[in-house]
Image (cartoon, rainbow, N blue to C red; front, side, top):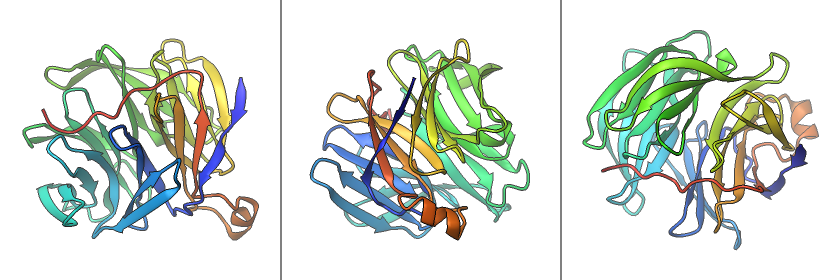
Length: 292
């Protein structure tokens, strides 16, 4: 099954990433990593706001106590959108100045999982980190090249994770009580000629929606079998991530990037860097906030 997403907002993001839906206010949030901005859009009214940040924000999530928790270049920060003050929680990888955070989200226990990558994508110098609800931080995976999409099954017994250059979605047995991973295995593989798997989300039927960087699409896959169920085409080659939103959580919001495209490609893809929307026949889950 194939379909096509509509352009929702011509954001012209250099590297749009990390979309998430604020169900309380009906807002879509995302980050432009390269331009050091976080964005907010009210889709129906078309009202948009952006804030410039002091560092690249690879991902950010809502906090139960208010404001956001941000995975920024130098570590995890607590951000107050009213005062626009960012307070460091923990600094990470200060010995690796070429690394930055790239993607992340919270599990059902309120932990913030986010990973790093080498900006030049030259080797596996990145890692996956877990910021606990009590603000303790631990490194969970190492030797990561481009840390990317995360998702959890409805019963929270499986975590899915993407290191883009592997072209795989890896499934782990997951213990929600401890946040521990075990028994890694390949759930989905993306073909060598398709592009790279980037961000992803999961629907209420347990199917994964995977953004394909360089492929101009989002694919819906069954992680139990690896079967491709649906393809949603996007009018931008560099599709970065996706998240469910809308009143019924049946709208897939898709971020894209202009970064890495030639001048010729940018002419051919005038909506590159835009935010797209696709009405699905299924539903997703509400965004999990940080904190216990």
